[in-house]
Length: 115
Image (cartoon, rainbow, N blue to C red; front, side, top):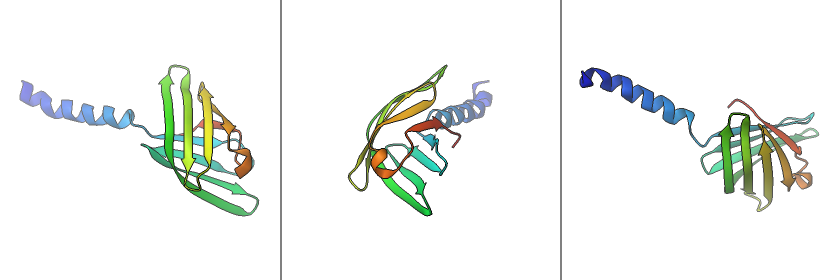
């Protein structure tokens, strides 16, 4: 009986591990598009300012984010490849940029989006 259940258990384990990863996608609330995509300990910030498009890779200096019943909560500090830092704090799936976004013309308000 246990040999018959083994393929099912393996499939469930793979499915659960894929759903609980460190990936997170934030969409900036602005007229121009902006995205923060976290993939493990790295990611990319992409945005538009006027006719120009920008993109910078980053590493996570700090990530204390969890998914609660009311949405994503926590804090993140990103170190961009340019050396600049962005700090975001979130509650109920909405994140506010507390530091660094103004200088780069990034939105201050971000929401969790589907990746």
